[in-house]
Length: 253
Image 1 (cartoon, rainbow, N blue to C red):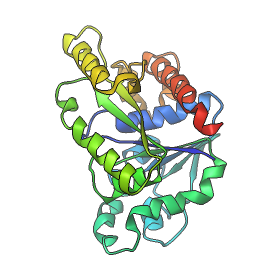
Image 2: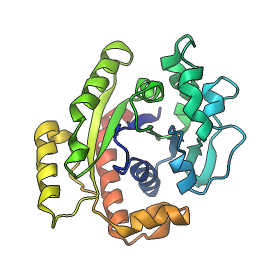
Image 3: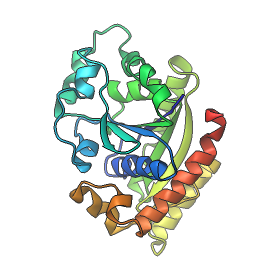
Image 4: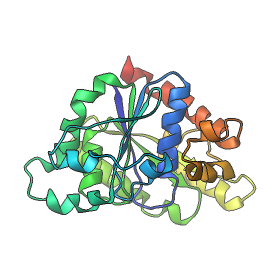
């Protein structure tokens, strides 16, 4: 039974899609089979991996028109693609019975096929994010190591707590990922110290360093391991994935 993990932050530009893609690719490097779900109407994950427009995307599946149809990017890594049409899903599904559980029901037939299912959530706290949280075993929070990125952390925790109480009792915060880190900047070090005080051991020990290769890889429609396997970005995400496997062993056992 695959572990379902949502990567969530209602602030944009914190490295959420970058982390989803490269955690997925890093887990493949460690011998895992991974499914990525692009659950953001901006479709940045789909675009960054160079996947052409599919006849069936997450949008059609959410509307009940088709089952989920994974697209194979490379061996052991599949993607459920997204489209701008998904932006209308929240309004279209507002009167749907059990609308918070649509994604969970769609994922059930696929969970046995993968070790990890990673959901790239939209930068909002609406119905799509609610569906992702209701479907997940845990949440990872990518957090840029800048002052403004810390604003709203209490709100994220509040939303997760509400979902756990009302819709998904197994949901937990699986970890906080510090991204775009530069050890030379006092502010970056201070932000990491602050989130460690707030989240304690939930903060991953691996810090994702600010690295130009991580920004360049999507332009080449590749993950960091394909684009620059010896870069700091690849080194950091592989280290992070080893931590993730270690933290989630008790769930897969």
